Length: 252
Image (cartoon, rainbow, N blue to C red):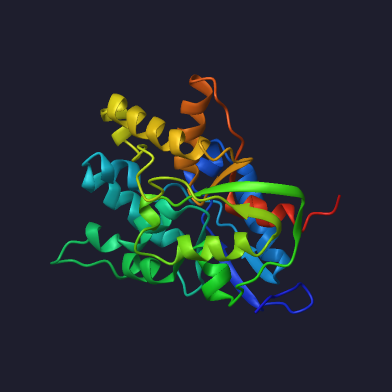
């Protein structure tokens, strides 16, 4: 069912902007707000939010990660859906049980896990929209990278569903599409050479298809692949999937 602004969703949500939106990809957060408001969703941005706690968790500092996760759960307390434009950060919230003490469980962390949505998953499965009315200005070949953190969720298929319904968009298949890009958060810092080799292999398969854009639902993957491509002199434009949806509704 396609949903237009004349048929508002009547929803109110909390937006988790993520560290990467804050530091590098502010337009992804802006696009998330524009698209959700276009769909009749009221978006609230808690200003005292920080991080989901994943960097510390991936580095093995579970105690520090637990403190950050508890702060996040407090900031996003209540019953409203929490929308995240990042499969990675959403997954961290989903698996908040990894930070729990059996003898002293934190109900707020459990609540956050149950209310968190990756933004495209929310549009398709939370709002029931499986067709996007709109078109890009010119024919565009898109390579869609599904991040590791979105595996086991509905986000990847939801993104494919919406992107493939946009006029002038062609989704390109590419080899080893299910393989990791090599970023893995702090993995790329701890094992930079392995991370770089994995990312380069991913780029090889993607660029073999000559896409106009590389799209993902994870800014961390896009940052990693774009950095490698730039250093290797074979740049490719990147965008978050929500920016593509936004581009179809913006007035010229």
